[in-house]
Length: 166
Image 1 (cartoon, rainbow, N blue to C red):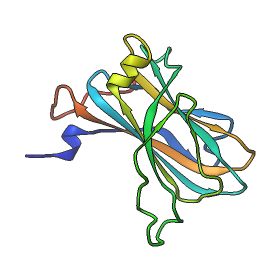
Image 2 (image 1 turned 90 degrees about the vertical axis):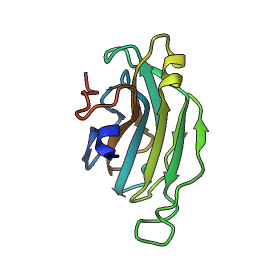
Image 3 (image 1 turned 60 degrees about the vertical axis):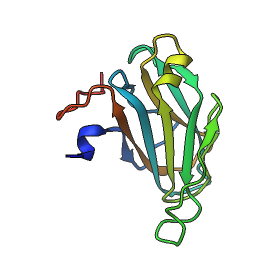
């Protein structure tokens, strides 16, 4: 049987909070040793001011060393506020530089889909198999948000997936 939850591991890496990006918000570090792909889903809520931020991805060889910025691919779903026609249409897959890309200011209900490949993590730092995502806030506004990591393409599929949090 083809069971989605046996092929994909979901982890809450930034719990949704009212001022999600206060300063630099780095997600929990994810161990990709058993997976080929990691997709971070960043979902935003309402913002009070012109809140914007820069999204970057880091690689490392362990939880403690995950600090090397790497290139990654991303899509957004922020054309319009949710429930409006077209609010669920993603952009084309785009490659971000190691310096990341800016979020859209003051967009309630935005979704940012960050695609991380294990081969890119390993190329970013020798022996790297850990990754994280950081949102660095550029302005003083308050924005609700959270980040979920979905690990896919397991190297060793099994009924109960091993933890990715070390």
